[in-house]
Image (spheres, rainbow, N blue to C red):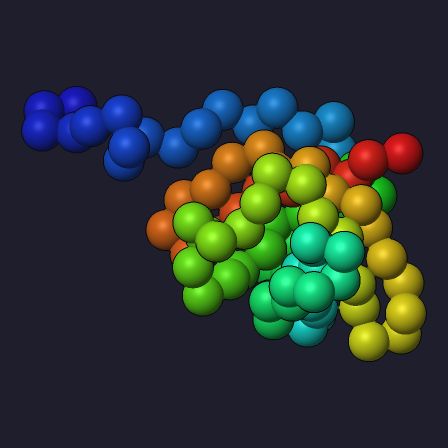
Length: 91
């Protein structure tokens, strides 16, 4: 494509299963629970999620994702783009 850059090109889909759209409020928690960011989970599977945050640069490489119902996922950051991050849930 003329004029396109690598940043504009979508990344190849390497997911094992398709993510299901959701709109779920959560909290990114790290630093021994001293640091907390609000977030919105935009889509999710049992293996990972796409999360919307105010500033992706503040999100660490590993953190807990906690929902209002008390459920929690330990997350490994896989990518960041604009105001979204992609995470893989650790076992």
